Length: 116
Image (cartoon, rainbow, N blue to C red; front, side):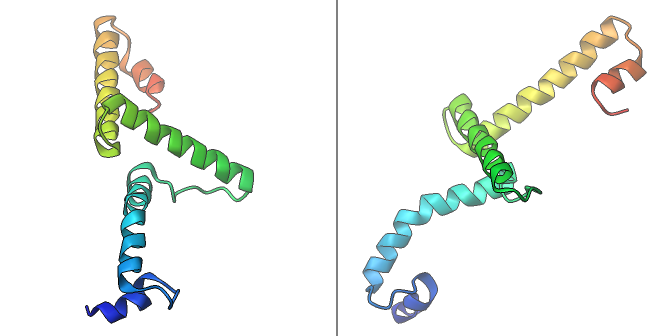
């Protein structure tokens, strides 16, 4: 794409030069990546609430999940979420194993796992 067309794609400010537009866009790139990941992996855009207060609470929970995931993995959001999902899966398997060792009926296990 020719540089003169960048004005139409990246900015509504016709006074900015192409280099300025690219610099601003580069500065926003990490923000754009965060929102894409938050939408794809944390369902940031999946809320079904209408009140402003509820939306703010939903965003707070999503952002806390993001920060917690990154802190736990000490890497990035994707790695953190993968780690937390793995831990959850392991916990479920351990729960089922321990319940089976204690001869807990399968119906009770299903009920506790909320799958029955």
